[in-house]
Length: 142
Image (cartoon, rainbow, N blue to C red; front, side, top):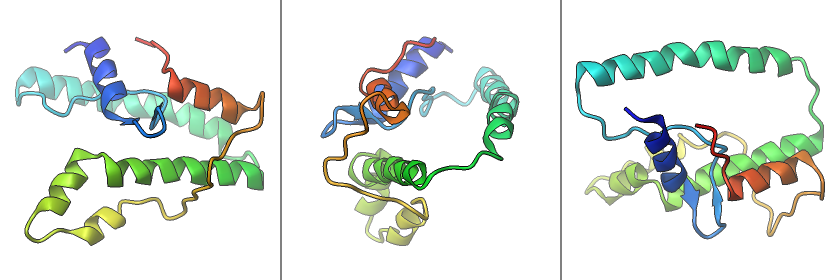
């Protein structure tokens, strides 16, 4: 299993063409792996590595106070998540194309708070602007 290929697949799949930006800052995408012991070992290793990498980030930031502007920015990014799911996600498209579409199943997967601003442009030099640049041109972190 090659991380570089999975990173590339992630960047290709989680892309919002109408905005020329990616849905997130990166990851790995391995939707179509064969059911083998090697695949099981890989998925298990990813799962076991998740908490040790994620928990320190949460612990560092869980007591931090967030401004209303930062909370609104988070809601805008959540809106992009919903936008991707409704317009591009192949699983959602498949689910809605069935004879008995499960619309509720799609909608309950949406974040509880989202926002859409028309033509939102982050402040110059802000962390939000820096993030948008990464979303437009993902880093090669592999």
